[in-house]
Length: 448
Image (tube, rainbow, N blue to C red; front, top):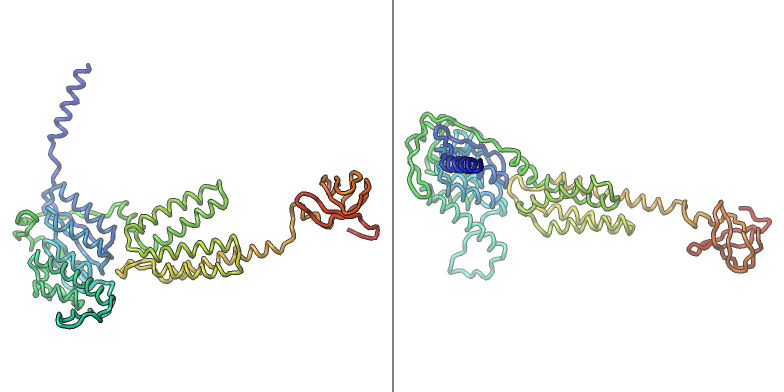
């Protein structure tokens, strides 16, 4: 019996390793990227390319409509496109779409660059420079000692971006001169102008038109040339899965920002009222998600440190009131840190000023409420402990010279008197010394 079982396992093993991977040569993969380029986009493109590679798909179409995005994410996508064994067509569509900033680089890096009528590309100047004019490169004969450090840094950023786009243009045989203009001058082109200037390969009204024009074209893959055969191919869309949707959500700077605050407050409430578990669990999960998001987003650690310092001051105000000094300072530090938290001007990756303002005011209001509650509590009379007995009547249970036992409000306490006390003598409680009541004989004229 054991021998038969081992033979069966061996046969199954041979069949497992000999069965070829399933192929899908009758369809092309279409993925749609719409919005800013970020970590979720990298995951989506990488997963789609792996799927196309494993299924031996003849072509992948990246339909693009983006205002730009993060430099690191853009470069990751471009590396995947350049090394892809599957031909990639970047198609700027539908009409009205754009491939601005990072989208222009991705378009240049693709094996085939296509656009729909009524679309545009360009404005490839690094966004860190904003709308400022690109500094002129000084002549070598001039004295450069007076050039400011910021101008030198701007030139480095511009030169790096220009060289990168120029190298992509040379790799794909596209217009190098316009690539330089797109970086240095922020130049943009319509689809028709891009085709005339050899920036793109073709204009297609829709995906079937695109496939018809691609049939018979030759593309240069990383190790070989490849002729496209797209006639009769069907289109298979790959949609973002739940993991990609979640990654897209938590890497939204506004969501990551809120998750961080939920995490911090959840842990504070858990430590303040241990045993409830729910605030601690929600806080821990939210904090971990926000830390993951901040790991892949370009954040300013100085801004993050300022935010945390501000929260620490607000918490200190709640536990050790300083008449608002710590609270106001903490609120200002929190708001300023929030403003500088995101270290990029890439479209779609800035914190909403409205959100920062609302949460900043909410923090101040919350701790103002806590501070007010503390002050009100200080004004209230003591309702428990030995202090509540001050001014009350007590009766001596025994005669004593200095200390002895008394009864008050049905309880027996140790008491101390400055004068001798008789048994059953009426006494007045004047104060406390730890757990010892300070008493004096009650005058017959005194009323409690």
